[in-house]
Length: 345
Image (tube, rainbow, N blue to C red; front, side):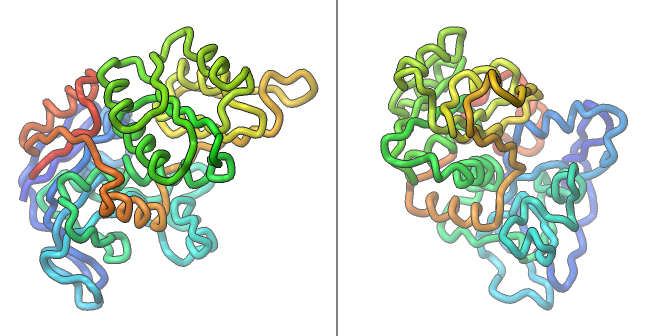
């Protein structure tokens, strides 16, 4: 079969490799599509010390069950499935409590949990081996279009779920960045809350997309954006801010518009920095809640699948043959993709 390998810093190759072997608890999945994420660009440019050269990339995968291990129950050849972005242990304290994206065994205090394509072989290949407990059936959903839900859907869902206490009717939520993650985050907010949504982006086409997805107000992400948001909230600020970009200007914008007691969620991995002082005269509102989460939980994934099955959540995709991977990566890096790029084996 063919698989896309990260062979050295800045270099990928499509290689012919043996069909992967699978064990009693595994599923052999025929890949329908693999989503391309900005974090894949981070891996590409991680430098010579990256420890996983030679592995297959791709952490957003969906497809059809090809074969099942002898201990697997409930799955049969032809079932359409979505692969979890988090491969947790399933038995540590965090996993038992439903916090599998904070797994103590397959992760650590400063290391994210095991993720396909970042260590174990990922989905940018013709076939993928995965434990049965790390996939969910998607019924009649098209697995090509569903593949990005594994991260681009689950990650916003988790961030939004952690902010539910502030997403009450009459609240204002700000979505910064209407790209691969943000356009799904906007839809999740629209489908699962009664908040007013203010969406920001620097790209006019993405602002048009945000309008079409139901944003109540769209604003250009520029030097006037913070004051516009404060004006829209009587100078109080937004009850929740979701930064799906994470570069310094968007971090600064999020910080400038959060309300007292507001939920501030940094989702994009753009490398921006967030600091504040503790004490009287501090520069930040009292009581704000700041989180930077990694991926999401199995429960988040099942909620995302349910919304997609109800027609309330859809991914804007750009399809590329797996053999045309370089163009897909180049288009993503150049900002030419609206929504999500999906590689098709």
